[in-house]
Image 1 (tube, helix red, strand yellow):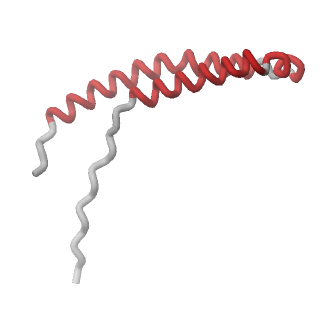
Image 2 (cartoon, rainbow, N blue to C red; image 1 turned 135 degrees about the horizontal axis):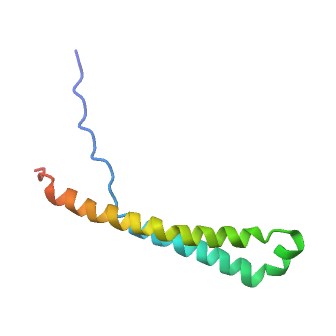
Length: 86
């Protein structure tokens, strides 16, 4: 006897802008903490590139934010065009 298949759940489609903003904030906080509290240690141990990594992560977050804003706008359009399930 074949068993009936359970209906597949709909894929998650959460808003993505909060994730991009959280990433921007995380890189900014990490960079500021390193700059304020660990600058001498970073210089003494030759790890100044960590600050550049934080700056790069923060700056690359802006194109990511723009992409996620576009994604969320398309998400709203997709949801408005999708037929309602009873």
